Image (cartoon, rainbow, N blue to C red):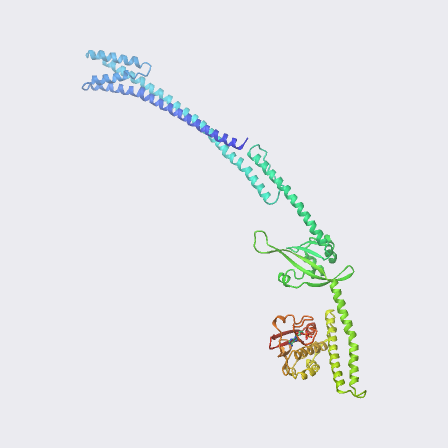
Length: 574
Ligand code: ADP
C-alpha cells in the first residue's frame, strides 16, 4: 500500500472515531437532557401545584379558593402519568362539591387524598425516570469508553508503527547515500514494498548502478593511463624509482631494478629505508631523503655504480613531489622520485680529455727541459760568446720556456685533481722553509716590480701536518698571483697567525682586488675574472683549493674591490 494511502487511512480512521465519539457523546448528553427536562416539566411541576393546593387548603388564607383553583387548573393542564387524569378529575369534582357546600367536610379529606395520590404518582414517575436517566448515563459512559479505547488503541498502534514505518527506510536510504559518497558504488537499497519508498529504492539503485558503470569506465581509463606511464618509465634508459609519502616503493623501472641488484617482487612495495639498511647503493641514493631543505638546494650528487659487468656513472636526482590538495592552500609532499641520469659517456669523455692532457703535458716536459738545458749551454762562454742581441734572445726564450713549464705543471696537477689521484705525503713540516722556498721562486718577479714583501709571525710558527711539495706549490702560486695583480712599488703582506687550533697563512696584496660577483667563482677550474690582462690558465686557485682541502685545510678569499685581495690558507697542527 502506498504511504500516502496509509497515512490517509490512518488519519481518516482516527478522524472517524473522533466523529463517532462526538456523535455518541452528543446523542447521550441530549438523551440525558431530555430525561431531566421530562422530570422537571412533567412531574416536578405537578408536585409543586399539589404542594401549593395543600398549603392553600391548610392555611385558608384570603381568597385561597382562587389560588387553589389556579393551581388545580395548572395541574389539569399538566397530566403526564397514567391514572393522573382520573385523580385530577376526582379532585376537581370533590373541590367543586366542597365549594358548593362547605358543610361537607368529608370532601376535604377526599381532596387531600386526591392531591396525595397525584403527588405519589409523580414521585413514583420521578423515581422511574431517574432510573432511565441513570441507565442512559451508564450507556453513554460505556459507549464513550468503548470508542475512546478503540481510538486510543488505534492511535497507539499508529504512534508505534507509523514513524518507524517512514523513518526506517529513510535511515537506510541515508546510509546508502553515505556509502555512495564514499565511492562504494556497489551499495544498493532493498525496499520490497510497492509504495513511494519502493519507487525511491528503484531510482536510487538505478543511479548507483549508473555511477558504478561510470566509475568502472573511468577506472579502466585510469588503468590504461597508468599502464601507459608504467611502460614509458620502464622504457626509459635512466633508472627511476617512485616512493610514496611513507617512503614505500611504488614503482621502479627495469633499469632501477637492475642496478639495485634486488628482485622486483622483493623491491616493490617495501619501505626504502628498510632496504637502505642492507643495500649500500640504495643508502647512497636516499641519504638526504629526510632533510627536505637539502633536497631542494643541493646539487645532484654523482655516484659510481657497478652494473652489467662495467662501471657506470650516474647523477642522482632525489626529487620531492609536492601537490596542493583540492580546496587547500599549502603544498603537501606526497612522495619522492629518484631519477638517476646516466652520465657514463660524458664521464668517459672527461677521462679521455684528462688522460690526453696528462699525456701531452707529460710529453711536453722532456722537450721543454732539454730546451732549458740547451739554453744553459748557449749561455756557457766556453762554447762561444754571444753578442748582446743573442743574449737577449736567449733570455726571452728562457722566460717562455719557464712559463711553458709552469703551464705544463699546472695541467699535470689538474689532471691529478680531475682523476681524483692526488698523491699526498702528509707529514709534520716546518712551514718556514716552505714559505722561504715559495718566496725565492718568486724573487725575480718581486724584484722586477720592486714590491716589498712584509713577513710577520713566520719565526714563531708551530709545525703543521701537510704535504711539503703541494703546499710549496700553493704558496708559490698565491705569492705569484699577488705579485702579478699588484701595482709596481707596492707591498705584499705575508702573515702567519694562530686561529683556534689551526695555523693561518694570509697573503695580502694591495692591487685591484676582485669584484664581489666573482668571489664565489674564483676557485672554479678555468675561471678567470673577465678582462684580466695578465697571462694565465685559470687553474692555479682551483688546484690550490683541491690540494689544501685534500690535506684537511681550507682556503678562502676576502677582497675589497679596488683595495686589494687577501687569500688565507689554514693548516692542521702537527
Ligand atoms: P690564473 O692566475 O692563471 O689566471 P688563478 O686560478 O690563479 O689563475 O686565478 C684565477 C683568476 O683570479 C685570475 O685570472 C685573476 O683574474 C684572479 N686573481 C687571482 N689572484 C688574484 C689577486 N691576488 N688579485 C686579483 N685577482 C686575482
